[in-house]
Amino acid sequence: MAGHPGNAESLSPRAKLAVTAGKAAAAVSRAAGRGSGSVIGGRVALKLDPDLLSRLAQHLDVILVSATNGKTTTTRLIAEALRAAGPVVSNALGANMPAGITSALAGGSDARYGVIEVDEKYLAGVARDTTPKAIALLNLSRDQLDRAAETRMLAEKWREGLSGTKAVVVANADDPLIVWAASSSPNVVWVAAGQEWKDDAWSCPACGGVMQRPGDDWFCGECGFRRPAVSWALSGDHVLDPHGSAWPIHLQLPGRANKANAATSAAVAAVFGVPPQVALERMYQVQAVAGRYDVVSFQGRDLRLLLAKNPAGWLETFSLIDPPPTPVILSVNARGADGTDTSWLWDVDYTRLAGHPIVVIGDRKLDLAVRLEVAGLDFRVAEDVDEAVRLSPPGRIELIANYTAFQDVRRRVGN
Image (cartoon, rainbow, N blue to C red; front, side, top):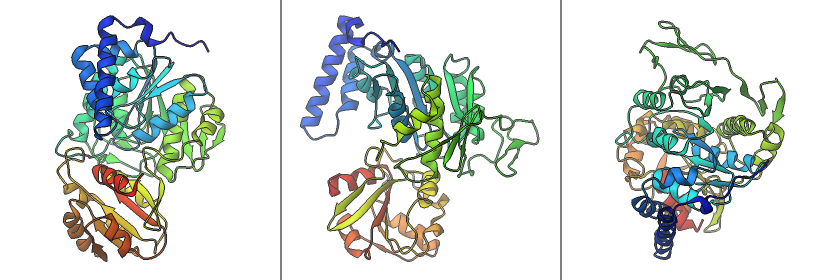
């Protein structure tokens, strides 16, 4: 495959200045110990050239990935698969709003593909700016209740924003909200990726009627809105392609949800001519994603770090932890990046942790403690991860945290 000309040669002097200034701002931020600097760098660059994102995307085959859960991992899997066909630039660390995306693309002047994770609220705008060749839509569920729109409204925004898009939309046929959002697009590849969490999709997004959900199927008995016929499917440990061939999934990442992410990623890779066998083999390289699933040694103990930031994510995470009596540490914050509303804790079925020794930490440890008490679970409350590890009985510890709590733990355990 022929490569694209690099971005740098074709940028205007203003755009080049914006890129340089953004990189300088990011470097200062990193030197000051304030993280990767990608967001501040992108903000500075966009101030100097508001059209910079579209200029940087001009010579790339752009793939956008959006969802409530799994977008960082799926972005990483797609990026690995597409490296079989050419150089890739990606916002691999999850800075998924326009500033972070601009920063990422500014570092990819020789890339052919841009694989971009996009925050749900910004999908339509980023799609407008980057003219993607493919868009992967995985799932929609309640998240950051104080910040994000109700899921049906978000699906409607996607539906309007993606109406008539020239991109190939690769969408999860098992999530009615995703099907509603994607149905306005003329070219959709439907994937049966599954849907564990169904509590946000009991009413029809098309008419408000009650959704019928026999087995894995779904339809609205009132308006006829229904699950579309699929081209790709996750079937156990295999991906079924449109020809009916079954390709084995070998991942180092745990859980059913990551197999679903791999199935979607294989479908996206196929849009660009990368065969399923090659795509899935390359996905095996991914051991961890921005610290998620890493096993770290801390105070002489092994901790597996797991991120779960909303009810759907906690449900998937409970399904992949080791069985009792494996010790579990739970950490919940409610800072700006998490959403300050913790009422979602009451939507999580914590009774699935019965039999595990549990220790609770985080800014909102007392909110979580009340929730666990109502669920009838035994637990202890600790001040920090150091004390929580000391209180945990022997064995590898499963540590599940929401977004900023996860970052706090990573900093403390040196990951």
